[in-house]
Image (cartoon, rainbow, N blue to C red; front, side, top):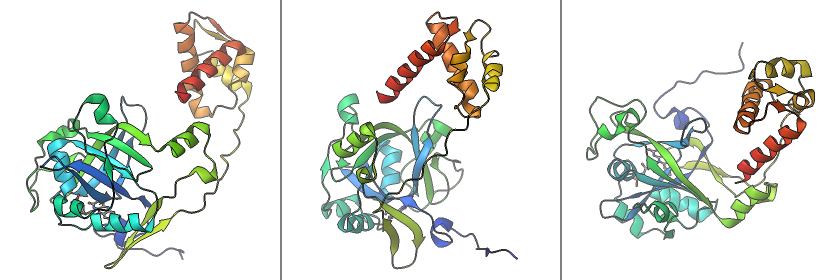
Length: 308
Ligand SMILES: Cc1cc2nc3c(=O)[nH]c(=O)nc-3n(C[C@H](O)[C@H](O)[C@H](O)COP(=O)(O)O)c2cc1C
């Protein structure tokens, strides 16, 4: 006998058949008159996080929404993360009511708008950002992926096939957008906390959309207490494991024993990549033997890169 009960998977399963923690984000886009429009979205997550030439988010939305139509037409969006305050969440829910035009919604908003930083830098026309946000991702739709640009705006009653798999119009009423992150901007206090090292007090109070939704309410939680759980202590490898991999990295570059010793705490799956990046540094700097001294130089360089 299982301790679990099966639940039928239906449309909007993340709301109807589960408890699913999500962000609440106000997405700003530019409407047909050139004004900023705000829509409420939770289905917005990191998509490309490493190993590409850019970083990206994915946004999942109703394709007839102002937001989707504006992205199809003008390709710019800003993801505004507001801290938790009852009045901000109330406003988020109001901005999440389907069917109102941007003009109607924006005329009544009690939030404030200001220019972001991305447009100032690349001179592009961007939506304004919400001043009350603690952080904002300024983004551009990567319309070339899966020829997303073939998806055209204008069909508010539902789209006919063919559909895209993940970028553009993806179903009769759905759209997905891969949004390249052009800038992450943050209020001074939170920015400084990331530079100095975050402490429990430095976290912004964030509303987490609890997924489950009934006919009358959106359910959410305001994070109030931050707890930490230490990452498990690094497991040390035997130095002979490092030596074995080091000797197979580059025939022209030798690693001394004390250099290998410095790598015993690197998780084994990252060892090859770590050795290769040391060897690359050695080739670039015409070094043929890497000792602990060179390892320190490489580490300093890496730390400086991380900081900048
Ligand atoms: C907290 C919250 C989260 C929401 N998340 C989404 C979402 O991820 N995707 C979506 O299509 N609609 C979502 N909605 C509903 C949209 O906000 C709604 O369709 C709204 O009309 C969109 O505004 P717009 O037409 O100005 O873009 C959400 C609403 C709220 C209140």
